[in-house]
Length: 453
Image 1 (tube, rainbow, N blue to C red):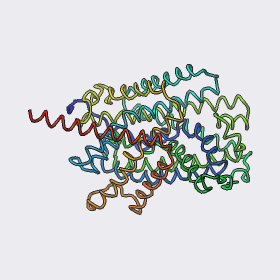
Image 2: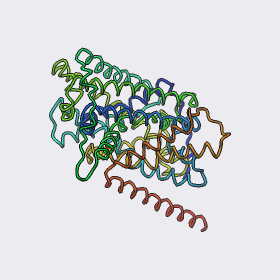
Image 3: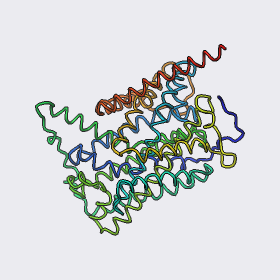
């Protein structure tokens, strides 16, 4: 089922374009819709703790991705990495299949969550019914597919422009709040608010609160690895992939921590907790409603930019599997003129369009991370540690500092967050993994029986 096509992917993305793609993927609508949830879980300014947990995880896990991306700069990201780490003729085939298996559901959910968040936030401008929100989210996905139907160099230039809007908007938010900032309000962290009950101790309640809040923060940080999905289209990938990952994480961590601190110091946390439009309310509080409307439009552009980057990266995963013979061959087709996997783009975007009409935002966010933690993030960190010890002399264009500490820290934090996820989502994720294992071995048995005929 392998594919041989004359058109090839083009290494057309520079370091700054790759970094821009990562950063616009990371921001999106995420922090603007999850901030009130995080503040609610942490009962006020203690919300900064959850953002710090997410930041540590992003740096630790980012170093894992940087090692793999520099070593194996190919389209597909985790699909390639899991095969290499666990052995292409051993467990790697199973792990990469499980990744593709969960990606067929998880990738469209990521697209849907961004589109749903966009339509929810659009309601600040124009009140929408449920049906109208679905129409807006679906139309957004279709628009982005049309924008992505072009050469990778054009996409790189568009990404830089979108990042300028993204970074400029967040900086505007930060600097606008300085004259109104109250340090006493922003840093009034009180863990005593987690009172014990007859069933749970205070420490257990705090453990759960940090876990739930960190889950939402991590969702907002996701995207630092997007450049790895585009590994086959990055110039000088051995240097530029690790740099773009670490540059993007550093930039976004600073912006998120300062943004959350500034909002904590300007608005009462009870107000933030109850608001669905935190950033818009913040601008309205400082300026007026007209300025808040203008800021909301910019936030929606940020959401559009994030989805633009996410769909771009995910469209390369089915393509990578197809050209390796592990997925339907039609997904391996490259556009004859623009040199990008157009069938894969249309398929991933199309399913994302359908999911945007079916799901609610909160459930989509939780489902996205629950499915990915074990098969993708934890497995990759374990695989990188094992790779170091099994093949210590392998060439590593980028080697994480203080090995294996970042990989171990990544595993610990991922499993901590996983342990606080509602049981029904965990059961669903384990069920999906189990079904994937059954399908993999059934497919393998069928292929072996066919080869003997």
